[in-house]
Length: 121
Image 1: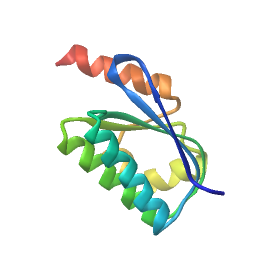
Image 2: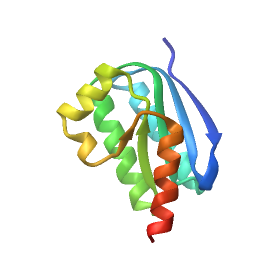
Image 3: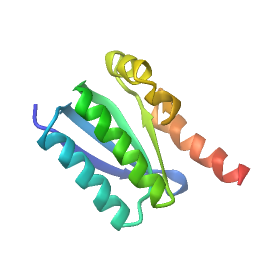
Image 4: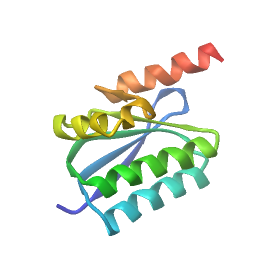
């Protein structure tokens, strides 16, 4: 399946990046990072990766997700992961990525966490 990205603005200045397809080493990982680079350039730094339609992510994809998190954080933003499929969520937990990048069951809940963050500041 060809990897696709669909951006949609959400509440509180948050952008959801819906990822559709498989993320594997090589071109797909590079495309994901380029997409995040473009979002940072457009000042879209509060990002949710909506992974409901990602069917497979290999170890290189996990690394790319962490690099995207680092880029967004370095730009003053934040990344959250929403709706990861069970095997992908398991892999993210097994690799302890969930200790660094908050994972939520839906994009709507992830937006709510951004809103809570704003109230705490």
